[in-house]
Image 1 (cartoon, rainbow, N blue to C red):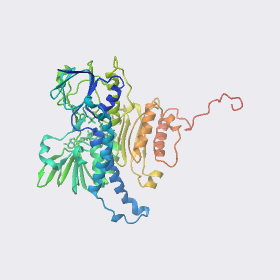
Image 2: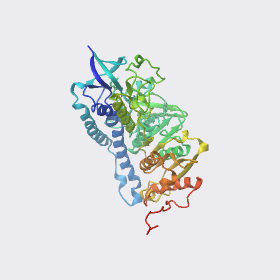
Image 3: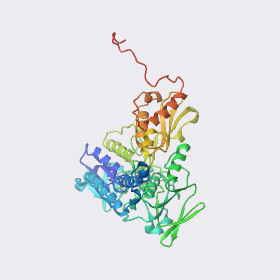
Length: 471
Ligand SMILES: Cc1cc2nc3c(=O)[nH]c(=O)nc-3n(C[C@H](O)[C@H](O)[C@H](O)COP(=O)(O)OP(=O)(O)OC[C@H]3O[C@@H](n4cnc5c(N)ncnc54)[C@H](O)[C@@H]3O)c2cc1C
Ligand SMILES: NC(=O)c1ccc[n+]([C@@H]2O[C@H](COP(=O)([O-])OP(=O)(O)OC[C@H]3O[C@@H](n4cnc5c(N)ncnc54)[C@H](O)[C@@H]3O)[C@@H](O)[C@H]2O)c1
């Protein structure tokens, strides 16, 4: 006999839990179905453990400026990788505990098992049949590992098992210099591992501005070898792995595969929904409502591949949860695109990507951080950024960044773009001294000079106060 619910949510990750939060406001008659470990990708194997490792590696890497700063004894510092990895797991467990609170009290409304569609309103979970008026798919994504590489066994790692390692070997390769590859390759190199990184394309971490991409590649090359433009082939070599890519042929102890992530769709049986699926197996959906075609089914988070980032997964889940309990799905405005890579310098893409902008309608302001006073003081003075604005209106459109404290400038620009501010509007705001944001101001001033009717001053003219004595 099927069980009947108002809403069934498939997946207890960030998107599923955000949906649950909304659904609970309207009904108690829901069910959450999760296959595999609880605790969310972000807290278990994603954002959080990766950031702990990055911070550890960055702290150790700082020793390289100590002599110059007059701090002696740095040559005696050594990295204890097993202790560092133990700390990653300790903090990770703490982050996971926080997310588990959301499912601990659900009792029978929490089903551990793999959901598969039998009909558009009916799911199979083992022997159980779950029928629901509305269904939310929030099944996330998984690392891609080519079949041929599986035979490398424990010599091939992904982000799913990197943080479980008790120790790390002395020589490693990272295949793929997307976001995960860049963050982890730099962290591993900074821990003292002899590191080689490969990407079959020419772009670092999904950048699309060739100038910023060159800066990012040059910064990474200061710390480890980067080979771009040829696919990597792997095969066993004794206890290690032979990596061949273009002219390069080397043997390493282990490989981290960071080739991208595929949506977790293969066991869901979406064929029964009666809608055309694309080449990845994805059904058509509206990113403003998260609704699949005109079905009472919603798809949220990494599984829909729209913007596989934590805050977007949470927003997707929020929208899906609201719409699964509304009489009619409502559109929700999406936030300005913002993607930050926690490399050093930070890499970020805000608003519209360079590659998507019409060249003849776009102005560009750029700056290098090589002479930034604050960055010089901190010995972090490398990198640059380019800001894009509309040629006619001066409205800010986007930016690509590889800069010290780039994460913060990216947020500032995202705020400005979402508020539809122009270059002049942003220049009127205060910029403190000495901060790296003064570099951003320089790029904005270079933009402003190219705009028609550039004001002579950054400061707005005083308008009438409406007070006789002052006017
Ligand atoms: C190494 C790494 C670092 C990252 N760092 C950042 C970062 O710094 N900032 C950032 O914004 N983003 C980051 N991300 C991305 C971020 O983690 C994801 O965007 C986010 O976790 C996606 O959440 P989700 O709910 O879509 O998926 P998940 O959290 O993966 O949840 C999906 C759940 O569904 C379950 N499931 C799958 N199939 C089924 C089924 N058939 N039935 C039932 N349950 C099923 C899964 O087991 C899982 O529990 C990172 C990702 C990785 C891998
Ligand atoms: N800071 C963050 O926000 C953050 C951090 C980590 C992950 N993430 C999310 O996780 C997602 C997945 O990250 P990812 O880095 O795995 O994927 P990605 O799609 O960003 O990068 C994969 C890279 O692998 C390369 N590649 C694929 N096959 C290859 C081969 N055979 N040889 C050499 N190179 C190959 C591709 O050219 C690409 O550059 C990201 O899109 C991002 O949204 C976000």
